[in-house]
Length: 95
Image (cartoon, rainbow, N blue to C red; front, side, top):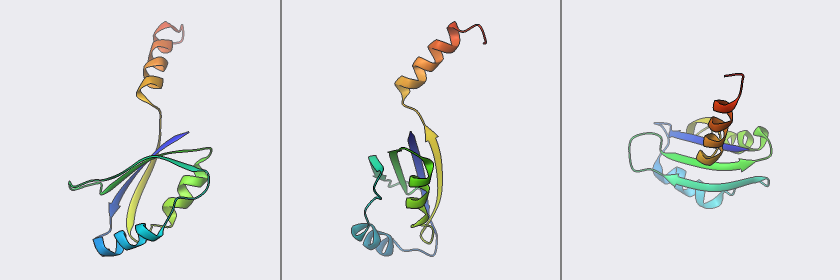
């Protein structure tokens, strides 16, 4: 299952502190990272797209950053899968 994590830096955390921890930290086993993006805009500061077999894996990883970031995690599907679902819904009798 795909998950998108939107991470907003807490005001009391510094870029230096966040960067130092990231250099020393690695993702847990079972969390396959598709992309990690550090944004130059306002918010969010970091976006992580990952694939995990269950939500517990991604939530436990994000929990390790709770002192430095406020994080929202949402399940996601690819655009391709979303379009296929839309096609199926359009041809379904239940719509």
